[in-house]
Image (cartoon, rainbow, N blue to C red; front, side, top):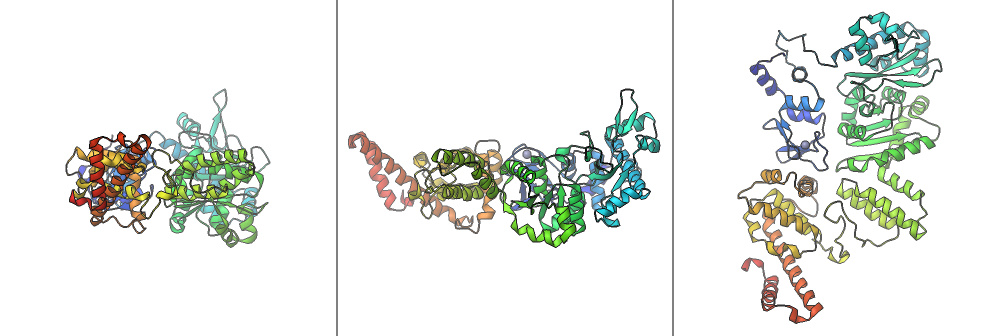
Length: 589
Ligand SMILES: [Zn+2]
């Protein structure tokens, strides 16, 4: 095991920037002095992963993952300590200690990666000697520098091309098998997987080779062949072109997912260098996640034919959970009979770029498609449609987006906006079930705003004024969350916002509270006002007024139901007192 001196590690960490490092892998959101994101180390829906630029550490309030820049790289990129150090050093422009340079320790998959690199080199060399393959690339309109950039190659027909070039010793054989470059026969001899094919090397986002794609030149099936699943290649986690697109994705803030390798290459050549493709599989959740990590706007581009529609329908099914604030997912259909490659080769990159604005929000597309499957003029089918659509929308992570579409859904079905729409978990996404009546200026948002203020400034003394015992009488489900949060605070003194959020981690409240806290920045300019501490006192007063009214209403309705006698003397006294306090400012109590 190689050892780096503590001084070297210190210097390395000193020169690394954790925020930038994390940001390249996980989109971060600044909140206060820290950055937040949904944790890359556990499944979660609201961000509890925080990065401190000041302390250069990260901490997840959900799964408690924590560490510094080296730890993050090891955990996130699943690499060894020496590899993480090497990577960081390269990034920081620091030379490795001389005794270490050039002898990075062996990692299990290293021979596989090395032999893949060698194979790619051989395939590129073979291309320069084969005119048929060269003609193929030329017929696709690719320039020599594009061929270089994507390292395109050619695998000759011989079944033992790689063994002949790289050797037949046991280690080479093992590496070739491990890298998915050869298959073994029953007699343990091996033969090349890629024969008489043009070769597309596939690199991951960090630029490491993970596999190959090959298109047959002699009409042999399958037309496209990829590396087999193995230690390096996991088709569900590959985005072809991601490495070459890194810069373009960052610049455009947009990712364009297309269907084929050639589409990617042709688009890059035409200047649309933010295009990537899946590799040998339909778009899956982890790839969509990777896309969103790379850019906030994701365009899924499909051919206009039946297969394209089918693929689009499949793709939107996996999307809702990944739709968070700040993310856009759009679906783009090309004119019938076109694919990105043919369109761009025929009409140029501008022709495709001109189509991008016609992309539709993924949820619009979903609702349209779903509607097509039902006859919503018939009430029973309308109910089915509504049920299915609502179940889909409940999965959408962005609460505002969900709200917008739940409204749209009701419009679509010709219904008033009064049906209670249950939100996953606790709170109603729309008005409270009581209906529109309660949606005044500060209707459903009062308790929400109060909870948000509380989460940000739990130490403010004004909270002690809040009529906590009356909270159970409020109809707003958010009141319950406020109550539970105050319970936590009741047991601790001088808990700051950070500590409070830490206490909430893992509790039932965590999701809603973290969401509220993270929402705060986005909503700060909205009608809910900023999160100024001087708002707290006024907010507490309004909450108290609301609670007193709720308590009076409750007692009055009990009295209505069973006659005034149902109120005890004590309740009657309380009612009188509350009525008086409700009229005046609660601060007198
Ligand atoms: Zn976590």
